[in-house]
Amino acid sequence: MSKSRLAVIIPCYNHAHYVGKAIESVLDQTRPPDRFLIIDDGSKDDSVDVIRSYESRGVELIVQENAGAHNTLNRLAKTVSEDCELISILNSDDYYEPQRFERCLPLFENDDETNPSVVVTGLTMIDPENKPLASDESRAKWLRAVWSMGDDADLSIWEWMGMANFPVTSSNIIARADYLCANPFRPYRFNHDYFFLSGAAIRGEIQLVNESLLNYRVHPENNINSEPAPLLKEMLRMHIDLYHDYAGELESDPSKRRRFYEYMAAAQSSISSFHPGLFQLLLAKLAAKSDESTLEALINSLDEAKIDELNDYPNKALVNTWDEKTPVFHGAALAEKFEVLKRERNELKAELRATQELAKLRNELLKDKGKALSALLGGNSKITSDVGKGAAEKLANLKRELGLSSTPKDSES
Image 1: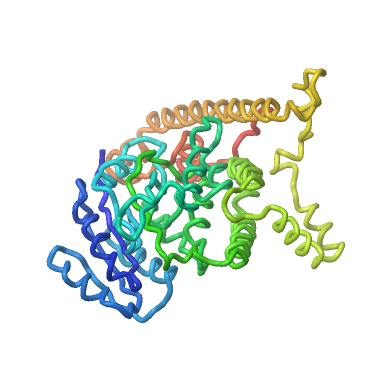
Image 2: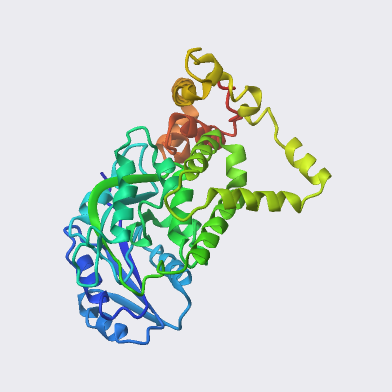
């Protein structure tokens, strides 16, 4: 197991009353971080003085004019990524449980193919006095409702994200530095964490440690305390941005498309502030701005040679699994499970084919004495590298290094 360097970053704005508790929770970790950087984003209170009192204990401080939460987080991430592989975010009014890093970091450092780009944990909502939020508080009840969904073994993490931002806050993000810098936070008021986390879930890059290792503070200054309209509008914008930013990846990657379909289907039952009806209205208004030729070209851009969904009827499994006794829509859940099992079977078959081809190609390389000797002497170390999360990705990477075609074989139906 290789140990990565971890940085903790805190953006602070007018939290002199809370930031000391946040800092202490980092310094008290059973696995301490390698770097600890705070940017004060133009606080008008005594936040800077509180933070400076910890500089002798290794806390770095940058003071800047107010730039906003997303800009501050992006600056923090870029700065610490120069010498740290992992980044943990903590907002200045929240605090960690002492074992947070000890529990979470092994998920990044295990030498296997399932290492995520992002890890989140359970959390406890607390009041200004560090006590658990009263059970009859609306936010506490919402959190319990959201996390009750996690008891459903059939619910994927991306479907869960579609129904609600269950990690709740950017304080719940531990991420690979390169992933965080490649996916900077957007200038949302409420949803910069939700957009980032939803994208990671659609990519299959999130893992959960199901323990309460974060304390999220609810107090009158929280951004979320607002009239409904601004939050609902930003939630609509966030999902339009998901469509916009991920269109290319979705078109080229069937597994991401499947997760996106399931994410958006789950969002129809959102218990966050996403209104699926208003979202349909927005899509209608967007379509109305296009002329007939543009819409026709858009539809014709879907290539059945690249998008396998065009080569089968979407209602086929529903009809084939119908028991002819109950109304056909009662079988929708069974049909969906049938399709999931079918996809998993095809993915396993594709992975098996890639494993076999990878082993064959490596054996051929070993038989080629010239290439084997060059690799042994370090002349072409990439040829013997093991880069990729699965056999298919490793095979594609190896073929690319060898200058061979990496076009995948057609998957079985």
